[in-house]
Length: 548
Image (cartoon, rainbow, N blue to C red):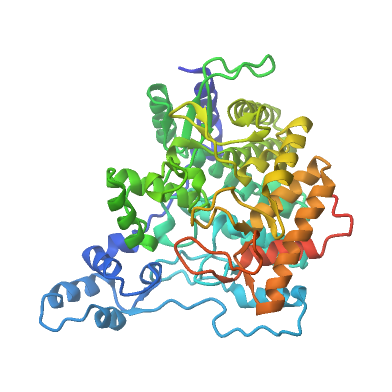
C-alpha cells in the first residue's frame, strides 16, 4: 500500500465524525423523472433556454404526467408545447419587474438589490427540481433562481461589507445543511446538479463567519470534514476502500489523481501524493444544457459518454467553458477536463486542509492538527512541483495523462498567491505576467485566447478580479493590486451609469462592447458582481490587507 494513500485512508477510518456517513438523500433529476418526455422537450427546443424546463414545477405527480404523455403523444393533433404548459408551471425569474433608480449610487443600488435577490427558506414539501434550504438565501439573478456554490462566497463578501452578518450566517448554515443532507455541496440547489460540486470555497466561507464568531471553525468542523472526504472520494468507509483500491491500480479515480513522488526532507512522499481534479459522477447530457451537450458530442466524433463527462466536469469547475479545458485550445469538441489537475482547485483544497488543521488546533487535538498540516504541506509541494513553471514565471494546470503542464495562461495561476502557497519570488514573477499580459482597461482578462467561450478573453469576471487583487496584496504587490481594482471598479461603474445594471461579466478589452460567449445570454443582477464591487467600494483608501 502506498504511503500517502495509507495515510489518507487512516484519516478516513479513524475520525469518528467521518465514519458516521450522513443519511444522504438522493433525488432523481428531471431527465430521469420524465425520460422520453424530457428528451423530446429539450431536443425540440420548446423553450429557447434549455434550463427552463428542468426548472419547471409539475402541476401534478410526475407519474400522472408521464401516463398522460404516453397516452396522448401519438394522437393526431398532439401539441407538445401545449401539453407542457398544461402540466407544468414556468419558473419565476429573479428580480423580474425590478426597476433600478438611476439617481442611486452603485452602493445604494446594490444594497437595494439584496432583498430582491433574497429568497425565503424553502418548504420541506418542495416540488420540482429545487432542493429545499432551511434558511433564507441570496440567488445570483438573471436566469438563476437557486443558490450556487462558489458564486455565494463572493456574494458573502458584499453581504459582510453591508453589515448583514445574519444573512452571511444563514447562507453558510445552508451550505452546512447541504453537506449534512447530501454529503457534498452541489453545483447549485437543483436535483440535476447533485452529480457534481463546484470550486470548494466552503472553508473560506467558514473563515468569514469566524471573523465575527470565534467558535465557527469548531462548530462547522463536521461539515468541513464531509467536504474534504467528498473531494477525496471517501465520504464513507466503503468509498475509502474503493478509492484506496482504485488508486493502487490507476492514476486517477473519481476526483482524485495520484502524482509521482515529491522529494522533500521535511515531508517525504516517495511513492506519490494524491491531488484533485474536477470529475462529474455522470456521463450523460446536462439537463440544463441538454440539446447543447448532445450537439457538441455529436460534432466531436468521440464516444458521447466521454464528451458528456468532460462537459459536466467543466461545469463543476465553474469555468464553463474555457480554453483551459480544450485539447486544441479552441474547439469545445476537444474538451478533456478530467485529464487536468487544476491549480486553483488544489489551492482551495489546500485552504480546506489548513482550515481543518486550525479547527483541530482549537479543539486541542494535536494529532489531527499535525495530520492535516502535513497533508496541506504535501499538497503545496506537489502543486509547486507540478504547476510552477520557472522559465515562464507562472503557474499552469497539469495534464496527468501526458505528465506535462498545459500551455494555457489563465487567471487560475493567481490562486497560489491568493492562498499563500507561492514564494515571494514566484509571486513577483506572476505579478509581472499579470501586468504585461493580462491587465486591460477594464480589469484582468480571464485567459489570453478569444475562443468565443465565456471564460476566455475578452471577458473579465468578478471572482477572479477579487482573487487576483487579494493575492497581489498578500505579497505586497500593492500598486498592481490597486490598478486592477481601479480598472475593474471603473468598468463596473461605467456600465451601471449607462444601463442601471450590474452584469455577470464584462468585456475588459473594449469597454464599448458587452461581454459575450457561453451558453446563455448576458445576465443582469448579479450576485458575485454586486458582492465584489460593494466590498471594493467600501474598502479603506489604502486597500492593503494581508491574509494571514
